[in-house]
Each structure stands twice: as C-alpha cells, then as structure tokens.
Image (cartoon, rainbow over all chains, first blue to last red; front, side):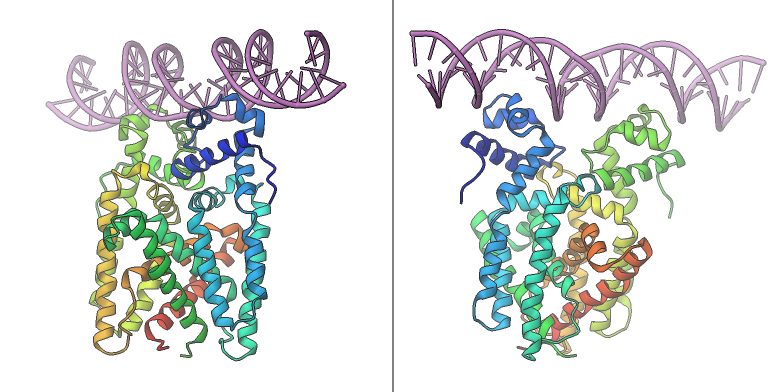
Length: 208
Length: 208
DNA sequence: GTTTAAATTAAACACATGTTTAATTTTGCT
DNA sequence: AGCAAAATTAAACATGTGTTTAATTTAAAC
C-alpha cells in the first residue's frame, strides 16, 4: 500500500505514537516529540499543521487495513463459531501488535474534547459491528447460536476484556507472574484469547 | 463516616473530580479548578500541597467504602450464582454512581507515570479479587461451576465490558438510540448488567 | 551554474502552567 | 477589645506550551 507520508513524516508519526501512548496526548509536548525524533520543533507544524492534526494523521496512518482483514475473514467458508473465534483472535492480535495507537484511541477518543475526529473512527467501528452481526445471524439461522443475545454488547465484552487486562498490565504482570515481555504477550495470545473465545462461545450457545 | 476534609476541601475535590474526569488530569489546570470552584488558585496548594497530591486525596475521598460493601455481600447466605449476580450488579452500580473517579482511575493509573500512587489501589483490587475467588470456589465445591475457568480473567470481563461500553458512550448512545441521560443509565442498569450476568453465568456453567 | 521551490533552523511570540510569596482579611479564643 | 492562628487574596515567579517568523541551507529543475 502506498503511504501518503514521506520518511520524515513517518519518523515523526512513530515517535508521536510512542509518546502519546506512554504519556497521553496532553502529557506530550511537541518539544518532547521533536527531541526524540531529532527534528526541529517547527517541523511538526510545517508537516502536519498542528498537534491536533498530527494526531489525526497518526490515526489514518495506523488504522487503515483492519477493515480489509475483517472483510477477508467474512468471505471464508467456515463454521460460524470458528469464524467468531478467528475474529476474536484477529482483533486481539491486531490490537496487540499496534498497542500504541489503540491505547491512544482508547484514551483520547472517549473524552468529549476530540469529538470532531471521532466521526471517521465511528464509521470504522460501525463497519466492524456489521461484520460481527453477519456472522452471528448466520449462526442463528443455522440454529447454533441462541437468539436473545444483544449483539452490540458483544464487542464491549471482547474488546473490554482485552483492554481492561492490557490497561492494567502492571497489576496482572504481578498477579500472574509474567516477568518478561514474552511471557506477557504469550499469555495474551493463549490464555486471554482462549478465555474470551470461551466466554463468547458460552454466551452464544448456552441455554439456561 | 467522618471525613478528614472540610467543606472547602470537599468543594475543591468535587470540582476536581468533574474536570479530571472530563478533560483528564493533564488536561485540567489548577486555574480551571479554581475558577469553577470559585476559589483562589493558591488554595489548592494551600490545602493539598500540589496538584498531584490533590489527585491522591480525591482517590482516598472516593474509594473508601466499596470494600466494606463487598465484604457484606460475602456474608450473605445465598446461592453462589446469585452472589455472583449481586456482585456484578454491585460493581456496576457503584462505578456508575461514581463515574467520575473510576474514569480517572481507569485513565490515570494505567500509564507508567503515576506508579507511586498505584500501590494502595492495587491492594484494594487484590482484596476484591479474593472476594470473587471465594464465591467461585464455593460454587465449584457445590458442583455448580466448572473448574477450568481462569478466575483472575473474570474481573476484566466484567469491568472491561462495562468500561468499554461507558468509555464509548457517544458511540453507543447513537447506536442504541439512548437520547437522554436517563435512558442511558437505565440501559446500563438493565440491559448491560443483564448481558454481563448472562455472560459470566454462561462462562461458569456451560459445558462444551 | 543559475534559479526556484522545499526543507530546516534558531529565535521570538503570546499565553498557560504549577507554585510561592507577602500582604490582607476572617475567624476563634480569652 | 485584643490577639494569634487560619483562611484568602492578588501578584509575581520561573518555566513550559503550541505556533509563527524570517533567515538559511538543501535539493530539484532547467
């Protein structure tokens, strides 16, 4: 995919991603970014216009291909439950790989302040929800999934579980003895992913 | 319960809660707080020492009785599943009632920056986890709950689902047509709470 | 090689930040 | 009423903020 950003811009974007993710948007100054990226402070305004627009550019830069991957998954000819499991694994893997930007999205786009940029992001999520609906409706037609689940609340359970775990990393590292970064990432990829898959499966199938 | 804070301090704390919650810790200035609380800027330093210590005081002020309520619940002589449901409802109700401070905790205490104050908060959570463990182990002994669930991951599912929903309030208000604050709160109290209870119940009971 | 546009720079700008100071007012006590 | 402690104030302080300016360097085009 052709990127609209040149090397210098990408360098700035990636430093911004690190810092925004670590210290928050308000907690990061343009001078912080400039210093770490080894550029002049004026370059940010020169290339992106403003700090606010730098954030916009960063989001565009990072969230462009999840939609594609989801649509590819939809086409696969596998059982609904397997599709759900794959969707969960895909979500977690993608987000885990791009921890930085998703942390920023999670943090910055929930406050009323940045409502203007929220629009594009909101469209992305509505599309994702549509994909999930299609899969679940397929499973319901086949009589595998129960019909009284509230589909829009499934995403919060998937993503919320993951985010709550990840946002409280220090707590769970300590609690579960995940001393190295590898152990932590591996725990997410196996145990946490499994837990979420198991949870959603139970929710979709269990008859009380 | 006797509070250690006088009226003026409480006035400052509550304004700080509102603003920190709305605009984040870094996004809120002492002058913002002073103006809204109709006090002089110097009063914050005078009463709390610093902006950082104001946050500490705010946390102490707000998170002092959840533990008590949980312990009371543990004593009740009801079935494990009902206890779990009550625990979920209690969590959501408490957090929903104190949206402000929990939003702040969620936002500010996940970044590495404020690790010092994290200790007391971490102890509170370990206690809460212990309570959950006791209830689930009781259910397992009675043969009601399955034994292969990872208990520490249940809290992320409960709280994560709620937080993800609540943090993305504008999105869900729009999606689910929750036009008024009452409709939104009611949806949390009924549908969302139900969804989470249903999810955890399925997870604990369903045999694949 | 000269010209033109793009990239980069240091400095300045105007304003916001958390905190402290020193002076004044209010309060509680005898 | 007189006094000491506490509360409150406006102003100052030093530093940090995002952004702009005007000058200089680099690169591209002819």
